[in-house]
Length: 322
Image 1 (cartoon, rainbow, N blue to C red):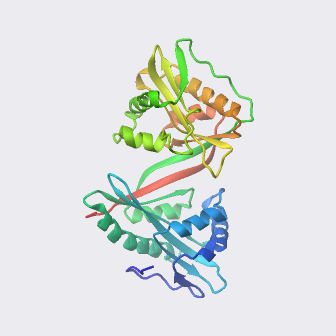
Image 2 (image 1 turned 90 degrees about the vertical axis):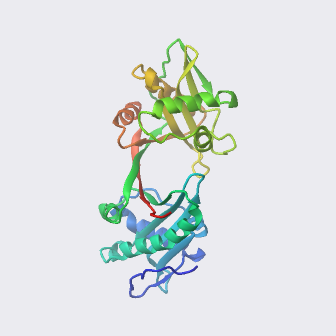
Image 3 (image 1 turned 45 degrees about the vertical axis):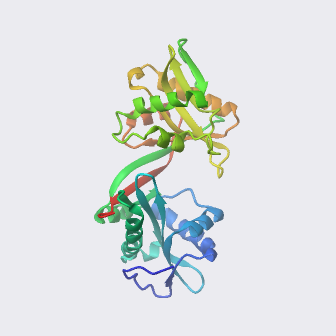
């Protein structure tokens, strides 16, 4: 791996080098050591860390002769239709924090990413990005001082489906159907009507379907996803996927109610319908994410019994000239 401009600080007893396949166990120990400070409660498996090593486009890690890691940083590149992105990540052992290592590592990753993004961009916007679950305030401060802005933050909420909860009650004039190719357009239409008040950057039909309701995606569950019609008009929807790494948990990846039909109890009724259906299908947990600036939705989920598990934060910085 070609080194990039920008020096990394000397750490006595450690040498900087790219990530190696043999680093997996040490990376797991590093994550465990950082957890008490960062508030992390969910850890990558050995297979997940092996995937990080394999997929990193550029990386640097400070390793001791015994194979212990003091700090690590890596990045991946993503080429999208309308933009290009470099996602960077890093960790520093608690005993080595406060010495400028994280700041230097961030600079190294940016220096590695920017030329590659500019090469890939071909006139499209380019972005440096990072995301993480929980993290101590110093990390966020470093990003803000380095010119990043918070793109969004979401709270991951979960519900134990083995608990007995309220029963769904839908109005007589409503009907509920699973996703099919024939009604896929109704799902997208309600998405636009539901989210137009929350974002000016609505996805086009192809992008939305690819991300949320792609029948070729092994994780998408069309038979568990639902569209609600009232007097024949699509008014609410929810889409479900199940990750291969967590087969007993069903994710309600997106849910929305048409603006015109809000404040009629449709959101609560649909959520209860989803919970009931997922429990009947044999899943142990339901999970969903809610934006931190959407307190009304958060209140609804908590009324049904969902509880906070962790927070995902996403930060972004535009690359000038990308």
